[in-house]
Amino acid sequence: MAFSVPSCAKPYTLDIPDKDMSEWKQLLELAKIGPDTWEGRQDDGRFGVSRQWLIDTKDYWLNKYDWRAQEKDINSFPNYKTNIEDIDVHYIALFSDKEDAIPIIFMHGWPGSFVEFLPMLKLICDKYPAKDLPYHIIVPSLPGYTLSSGGPVDRDWTLADSARVLDSLMKKLGFSKYLAQGGDVGSFLATTMAHSFDSCVGLHVTLISADPPEGVALTQTEKDALGRSAKWQVTGTAYAQEHAWRPSTIGLVLSSSPLALLAWIGEKFLEWSDTTPSLDHILTNISLYWFTQGFPRSIYPYRVLFSTPPEQKPPFIDKPMGFSFFPYELIPGIKAAIEKKGNLVFYGSHDKGGHFAALELPKEFFGDVEEFVKVAWKV
Image (cartoon, rainbow, N blue to C red; front, side, top):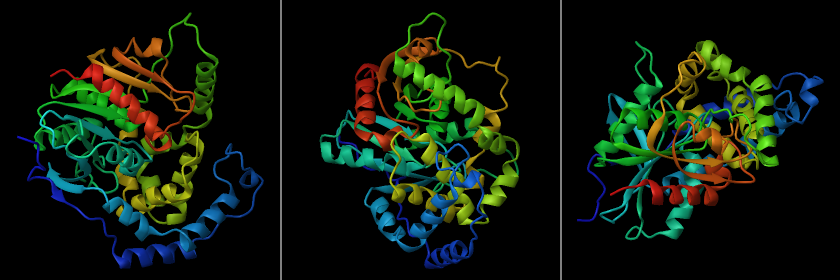
């Protein structure tokens, strides 16, 4: 019997109320651009976003950007919601008609969202009709991020909690086993799911922390990538310390002003990309965070990622693992180092691409995933 959309997959349509749109516009119009400074005049990113970029982007967001058009684009894909452990989990899904289709869950990170994967989904839809699609493609909003609700307010919420919910999502959809793909926070979730659940039978990631062994010959691209990463770890992680140790303060601050949120998240898209995404994409992502008030709910992973003692290293991953190297990733993985972390069955290397690989290079990114699936999936 061909796989059909499960009854638990309740269709969802994104429709931000006009009242919320009006309030956003009023707040953005009244938001004051900070004073002219020497630091704010530097447009090379070393001090963050420039004052001129913020002026220009504020104007574009107010007067040229079309949220309703972006909303329509999002709704052109099959969106669903389901409730798991009192979390309203949003996800986009391309369900195949093939009985032997392979389930894959794709998980984003911060400050991204499910919209990172829309270009990939368009490529998949163009390449495969539903009757021939070899995969069930599941793209959730992580618990706490944008269109998925957050955890309870009377206790902490952790990556382990999110991993459990997302594993439950795949099981609820009828998949007794699946592959996990992730970048940024999604890579840590994929790793946790592979360690914790028999149902997750393999993983593909684009970010993993691993120092290359001594004596390994590196290409110039790899040397340059590691140099950029070393510099970023010195000069570019202050935001993460704030997320980890003062989440309440930064959460309340950025929830008070769309302009503040624009500067905080916009900086990351400019700095962390090899090819900067379109302004429309950046603003769609930030608009989702704003309209859902998702930012304070989304930064819980940093408390774990920046407080775990270095000696508490994760165990070796014995399940099939794939990795894709993109040189402008914040923590680029070198093959010899990744092999020490787990059962590496696929390694793809690229000469370009950054932190938002699925968005920047959707064809190359998904091509790697397909190659990984060929060697990782066992019937």
